[in-house]
Figure 1 (tube, one colour):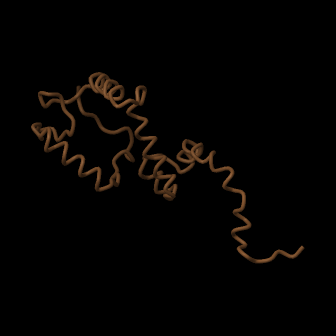
Figure 2 (figure 1 turned 180 degrees about the vertical axis):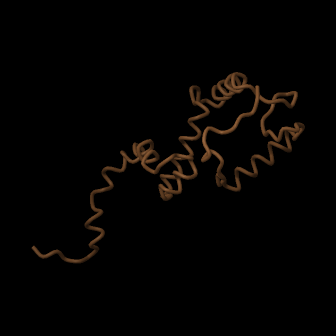
Length: 136
């Protein structure tokens, strides 16, 4: 197994993370150490790279223990992106963070999360006019 370059040049990017995430990474490193010279956060018991198949096996077992069997690792990416969009982040910023080639791809992929908001459209125009009286 060898390291390889990311899929595209846009794959090299900085992804902002909450302080809570850095705290969890620090806790992980305190518990499991950094006994590898590869700079990897997750390794085998011997401090070597984890193969894709071993990671998949361990991931599936962990999801069963956590009560979410069937949750794919890639689902975490979708959850993260959905949380950014739901929080009101600018879609162009979300596109950059996710590494999508266009904001259109981001919207096309994640617009389904707004389907439940359909009823909230009622009253938006009335609220925009505020207490102004509309001539009949």
